[in-house]
Length: 391
Ligand SMILES: C[S@@+](CC[C@H](N)C(=O)[O-])C[C@H]1O[C@@H](n2cnc3c(N)ncnc32)[C@H](O)[C@@H]1O
Image (cartoon, rainbow, N blue to C red):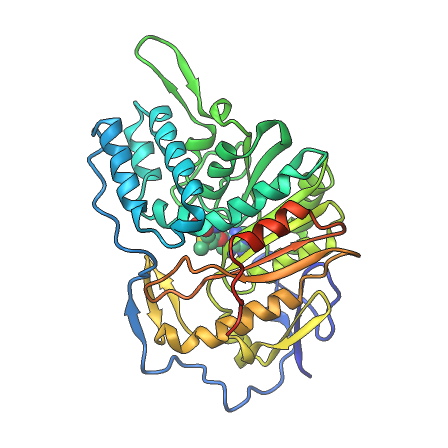
């Protein structure tokens, strides 16, 4: 029988679920014999190349550089950033926010060193289309919006949104990631360090600054394994069911089948109103070898159509030449868009925004909104120059 990998909120078409490491996983799918065209072993022509998304930033000034020198470095790093013509305003606002963070964390150099990586500039550029669209969406809502930042990592996207969105219109940003410590637990080295959210600093004069209170819009973390249906159900109860207004699901750089999980939350949760999904790596070849079919939002497609070898390791791409997998990536994004089920009158689109210019091709964003489309959001997307998403 053919294996069918369905979104967690939807029914399984064939095969039973199996318990694996405490979570439900696709590992228990019934499988039919692998097709001979699908190679389990990586092809020989692998490349190991740097991500090469934007021009290499100039070296960061030393930690104790003056604030003007630091701001000058940021401005210089963003001067020729892709799509500056469209997102230059957002780049500048984000740069000003980073300077405020630096001020906030002054006196805590270890924390700042952990946070202020040069890749922050790349993250900023790749988040700009998400920030712009979310801002337009929020501006049209009558109730306070809850932002759910899926697979947040440290949470750069939410950190920018906290600084750029109007605080009176946003309830909070929830940073969802499996690598956070559990609530109230003592963080382990393997966890994402959350001091930039919950930590504090004691100044020599005896005053204490709470970082949690310093964010203009509240940030909270939520440890969730999105591939685990039981924890996802708990997350729905704790976040989506309790949201006082619409929920915006933002999913930036989701690897492999995590993108399907983001779509599940958009498709199945009544509180969810808005989705931005920026997929990252393709699903691993294992899914094709197992001959699986992905099903999301009633849309079904073969894993073999989209699965690929290759992944980033420590910022390096280890896998086939990336131009060779670009067509698969475009098919993957098109399938994901097809799997977004917008409620009556809603709208969705797959957009290309060339934020990766030097070898990177992950320039596709899926925007979807349920029910009544927000004019400002869709006009904004059009004004920022929607490019044909697929060649
Ligand atoms: C490529 S990073 C993206 C981080 C951030 N969104 C960004 O754009 O920089 C992927 C994140 O997904 C998280 N992740 C991986 N598998 C996950 C899962 N099953 N459930 C929740 N988070 C997961 C990782 O811990 C990591 O922080």
